[in-house]
Image 1: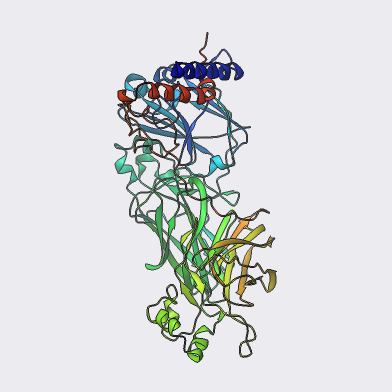
Image 2: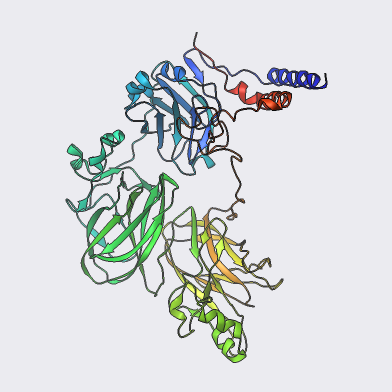
Amino acid sequence: MKKLSLGISVVLILALVLSIFPVVTVSAEDIYDLGPFASDNGLKGWCTNGYDGIATELTVDDIKAAKGLVITLDTSPSTSLTFVLQSDADPGWWDQTSVSCVDGVIAVDLTAMNTWADFLENGTQANLLIGDWGDFWDNNNVVSAVLTSDVPDIPAAEAAPIPDQPDSLVIGGGITLIDGVWFDDGAFYEYTIDSVADRPWVADASYTFRPEYQDGGTGPQTEDATILGVNVGAICYTEANEWVQYTVNVTKAGKYAVGGWASSGGDGGIVELYCNDALIGSFDVANKGWTNYSLYSAGIVDLEEGTYVIKALWPNGSMNFAGAVFAEVATNPYAALFIAGGNNTIKAVEFDNDAYSEFSAELAEAGNWSWYFDARDSFGNYALRQEYQENQDGPQTEAADVAGIGEIGAICYTHGPDDDHPEGEWVQYTVNVVKGGKYALGVWAATDTGKGKTIDIFWDGDLKGSPEILSKGWPNYNLHDVAIFDLTEGVHTLKLAWPVGDANVAAFVFLEGEDYPQPPPPPKDDNPGAGDGGNIGGGDDGASDGGSTAGAGGGGGGATNPANGDATILFTMILVALLGTAVVTVRKVRAR
């Protein structure tokens, strides 16, 4: 009777929950309110039968009865989004199209999807997904999402203007962008079109900026891409070892920091930049979403006046390329350092080649520091700038793993002023600001010598802040607030000095706006105990391999053990009660 009483109590609780939360209703022409959604790597969506996400009541028949999907957001994004119909229909299990949000509303004509007819004929599972594969959902939320029985009116978005192709590409000092879409005619290697049979969505790939390659798909695909508020376009649908090249005219000789604007919503890619077939440098493109472009550092190049060929190559594809940046610098930088809006990290170990004061090695010799010599001989204190190891004439660097950034190294063995070195130790950086505005500066640093260890940070000679470093151990780097100030476009100097020494510094973070950068939250398991499912068809037997990246749904849970008897039944009833609100919000509402 005790177990029976508990069961009755759970049922009463469930009835109470259902009475409190109202049933979702929609207008007569709408056939299904999609309710909650699952999230996976920058996409959010709705799934049938609990596959790949939350276990909604949505069925394949609901989708097949619809012709449109209307999604309302709380804010309108500044970039276009991608809508995906993912199903088990053959051929083409993944079908995507770009969609626009006008006044917070996204309208999708499902019947216009390339694989819609195949899905209607033989599809048994499906996902409806929306997003940009990046951090879009950090700042946007779904207000409602409704399947409609009619094709919805698609609100017209204002088309981004397409700039005219320049007569020539010129590098003439200052900061210059070489737009990625204006590659030389016929100077490329592109084979994406060869794989159309395996990837039907490429058949509709964009040639927005270079329509001369549309017929027959004979050249690189190009699409809209907004950089610093301007539609400069980008090369898209890239495959391994494709490349393009640009003939440029250098009208002002000098040393240039070189970077590239790129994005990825897939596995991430690599871009290699060459000048007259000599490698300038390369960079890894992070997965932040296809429409979320970042400026990456490539390297430094010396250019005389004259004509050069710049080549961009992607060894493994899986990225979009919007262009190369050349920033004239008068110093001798070690790396091309850029600030271009958003969140920008500058590694402390990438100080300029000839801009520092360092005397740790001198003190070690005078004090006969055996531990210092051991570190030197094993490259332990010149781990990342080994060019200074032989003569011990530069700042020491060591391995350092920073939360959310990774293994980036740090400047170590630092000392403050003494009678022979009144300035103390310091390093300086040449920084190219591509997008001006207000930024909040933070610094990752560590110490193990107690309170009172500060560092001084200067911008163009002005002291901006002197944070005291938390003493939590040498390997434990913490993010410290420095200052919020205005940056102007152009080339600037960032200086780091140690007024007392004994502080390791790993990185600077410039975050656009007036909010200081924050450390990432500690890692957590989003779906503890789940299996490795998460794909269409995963967990089809209801066993434990039905996990999902959203930490919900899955394959319907593991099989019960009959030996557990009443305990299993009681657990199931409690679980139903706890999920009562979710059940209500995804209830079907069919047209009458």
